[in-house]
Amino acid sequence: MPMTDIKGIIFDLGSTLIEFESRSWDEMTDEGQRMAYDHLIASDHSLPDYESFNDRLEEIKNQYRAAATESLVEWCALDAWRKLLLQLGLENPEEQSRRSIDLFYNVVRDGVVLCEGALVTLQALKREGYKVGLISNTIFPRWSHEVDLDNFGLTPYIDFRIYSSEFGYRKPHLSIFEAGLEKIGLPANETIYVGDRYIEDVVGPMKAGMSAVLKYQEGRDYPDPMPEGFEVIDKISDLLKILDIEQ
Image 1 (cartoon, one colour):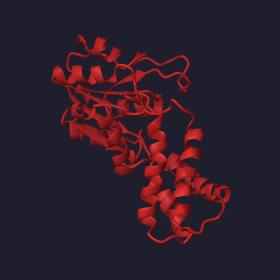
Image 2 (spheres, rainbow, N blue to C red):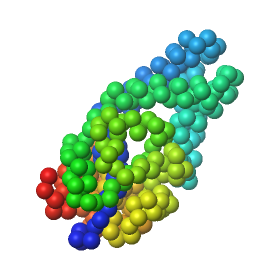
Image 3 (cartoon, helix red, strand yellow):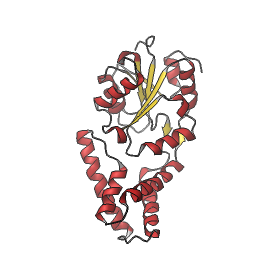
Image 4 (cartoon, rainbow, N blue to C red):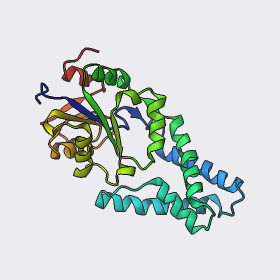
């Protein structure tokens, strides 16, 4: 992969810059949904028992997931909560769904950690004059992740952020990478995409004409043997070696 002409880097978020999987997602989901449910009960809302409530919510989420997997049209957790609260006849479903998502995501945020080397890598890229962006598949609203980036001091080093929940399509849909290239203001052959998933973060950007760097993540579903045509790194700071940048 020729790197002499690279002027821009677009990153994935989860397991690339920030690690969301330091705890089991099943554990976090149950804890977060219980917290939101308890808030609704405390607000004098008449609701079914938690198990029934949770089963209905998971059914709605699974419907959204199945549709998104087939079409790559992204879904948002906010929509799933709103749909359930409307079905249950709650007043102010918009406000209550936003509050429920905030409570849920607070549980997620408690376990979020910065990936090793993420901050120093972004600082080095900005110092060297690279344009830096982010494209993330997520079902959470923009504001949830913006707080994360602020908390870890990453925001000043990322020129733009595209979240699939807001954009409308998820990776590897071509349109989300085209939007990233438009925002970064560079041709595809001068831009690298860096992420931890093969289909979303390697196949997707390469179809858009970008180079790709795969940040290897234990437990991911990768081809065996790994195809050629892209770089594989173990930690995000290894990107600086590829670009011949001193930390």
